[in-house]
Length: 294
Image (cartoon, rainbow, N blue to C red; front, side):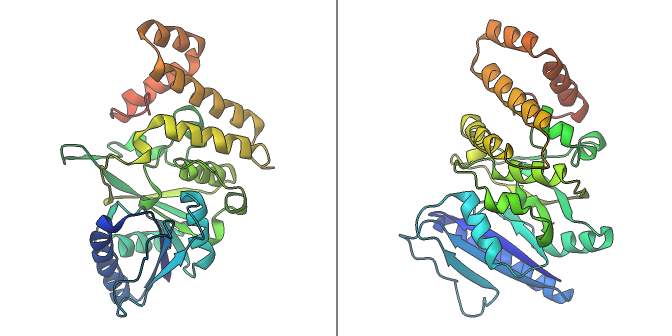
């Protein structure tokens, strides 16, 4: 089996040493287990030259965009060049354990997974780490479309996922989000709407690194990206209109909640009482600080 790791590169020189070290470790572990690795770096800052570090790293290659095209375009460009059986979309600033890919591939083969999701560490501003899925209830929601529609995204990053190349929706490849921040949310929604099951591996093999530039930290940016793909979903023949409406309602409510005074928060919550109650239940039952304000 072969895994292709696809990483959009945007002025990410400071991350490349740790990225290459991680890929070398994972390539070695996969090779020892009889599998192989392909790494595709998609250069989305073509005014900067990006080269594979040495000839020894023949499993790494570079694809260069003809301009700054954004994350979704870059991921699809990498996908078009990929030859692996499984795909991982890994951000340039995030970290995989040295044995992550072989652990995930072994589990995916055993479970016959189309999508395999591992647990993750969420790095905080002070350098500490929080576990993403902390109880069985939260883990059980990974494949639940209703949760993605009424609460929000349940996978912190595609870097904690192995995806069979042949299940990546054609619609996602052809209808691109122009605003960075939520193309992964868009991908999970399309997969779940198509009935694809997500399997879970209870090992924290991925770390979402804290950086001030992380788009996912800015909910206004990610919300704008969600509104972008909501318009695209109208053209998808298998995504239900009522689900588009629910998602729009949830994103709009949370956007209003975050921007409001205490009185405004109460008013918009009363106007969206069902969503408010579902989000409070989610926050309590998952035992995390996430959920309602994400």
